[in-house]
Amino acid sequence: MDTVRANLGRVKVKICGMMQYVNLVGVTIGYSIASSISMVAVKRSNYFYKHGHHVACNVSSTQYMIMFGVVEIILSQIPDFDQILRLSIVAAVMFFTYSMIGLGLGVAQVMEIGKIQV
Image (cartoon, rainbow, N blue to C red; front, side):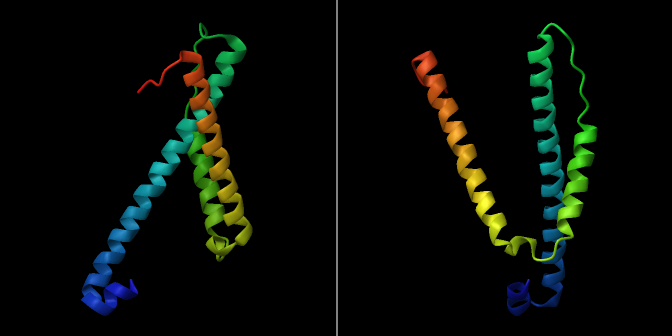
């Protein structure tokens, strides 16, 4: 915002700020929907594992969207949340863990099938 103000003036700062907030709202909604879909998928896979695939499993993602939104609101109240060192370390460890899980699952699938499928 400071760069826009210095180079383009006050009117463009307001336009840029409005676009940033619109983008932030869109990303937040997208993450809420994606996380609830992922949580429903985990719940459905557990249900199918326990009861079999022949049983219907109707799970709504609404409650998961609401829970994720509440957690987002609570975490957004923490001052300087992005500056917490331990959070950055945990995020990096989670990233590498997820990457290794994905890599491991990909290698296992290639070993099972015998070729790479696209």
